[in-house]
Image (cartoon, rainbow, N blue to C red; front, side, top):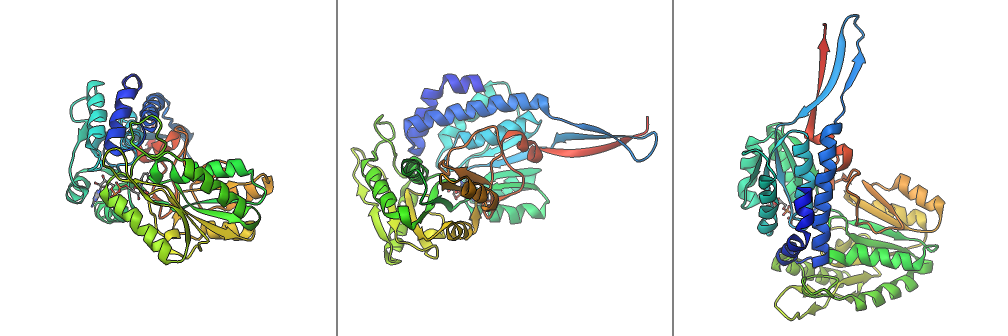
Length: 405
Ligand code: NAD
C-alpha cells in the first residue's frame, strides 16, 4: 500500500486536487501522509502487546490479549478523502478486522482509487468493501451489519449515528467539528503569531476540522497583529487548484460556498468589522473567495459559536491571559487549541488547562503528526482516540483468560 501510494503521489495528488479543490501540493502531501500511515500500522500489526499476570488463586494463570472487533463501518468526510480513510482502514486491517468503507458523496474518485490499491495489494475478497451513496440512505443499513463504526464528519451526523448505533450496542468512535481558538498574548513573537493565524485559519480553504476560527488577542499586540494578518491576507493567492502558484483553492461546492457567504452576512449583521471575504472570479468557473477576518467580535456572536468550515476567522480582543483562556474554553467544542507566547508560565498553564484534545504552543491549530493520538473533547469527539498506538483501543477488543494448566 505504502509503496504504491508513494510512487503514485503526483497522480493521486492531482486527482485529489481535481475532485476536492485543494492545491496540488496539498493533495500530494495528503497521499504521502496516507502512505506513512499504512507503513506505520504495518509495523503496529507485529507490535500488538498482550499481558500475562499472576492470579490471586494458586495454580491459575491469567492472560490479557487483544482480538479484532469484527466488521468495522468506516464513514468519512470529503475534506481529506484519502488520509482520513487511510488512518481508519490501516489500523482496522492491521489488527485483523474487515471493513465497510462509505466515503463522502463529493469524493468518490479518491475513495475508489484507495480501495483499488487495497484490493491489488492483496487484501482477501470481502475484507475491504467500498459502498457508495448518500449517507442518509446507507447509514442505517451499515449500522445494522457492523460491530463498530468509526465516523468523521459533522456533529449532527455523528449524533444521529450514535443514537442508531447504541440500539445495537455497536462500538463507536466519532470525530466531529471544532471552533478552534488561537490565543495571541502581548509577549508573542509577532511573525510566528501571524504565520500561525494565517496558516491555521485560511490554508486548505479553512476546510479542516482543526482550522483556527477564534483568534483571541491581547490588547497590547492587537492592532499590530490585525494589521499584519490583513497585510498577509492581501497577498494570499486564491485560485485554481492545479495552478502551481495557488496557495488557497476554491471552496468545495456550491452548498459550502453559500453557507460561507451566509456566515459573512451574519457576522456583518452582528456588528463585527471585516477584512476580505469578497467573491473572486477565477479563469474557470468555481467557488472562489478571498479569506475573511472579522475583528472587534465577541465570543457570544454566532460567528464565534458555530462551525463555519470555510476561510473565515474572527478576532476577539481580551485584556489578559486569564480572560483569553476562559473564552478559549467557552465553546461546545474541544478539538484543537493554540497559544502564541514567549512565556513558559503561560504556555504551560495553557497546556494544562485548555479543554481540548490537541494543544499547540507557537504552532498552528492544524497540522499533525501521524504516529501520535488524534481526537478531541466535548462535542468534537466521542470514543477512543484515533492514530498512533492508541488506535488499538478502538480496533481491538480485550479478552481476559484464566487458565488452570
Ligand atoms: P457530514 O457529517 O455531512 O458527512 C460525513 C459522512 O457521513 C459522509 O460520508 C456522509 O455521507 C455520511 N452521512 C451523512 N448522513 C449520514 C447518516 N444519516 N448516517 C450515516 N452516515 C451519514 O460531514 P462533511 O460535510 O462530509 O464533512 C465536514 C464535517 O466533518 C465538518 O463538521 C468537520 O469539522 C468534520 N471533520 C472532522 C474531522 C475530525 O477529525 N474531527 C476531520 C475532518 C472533518
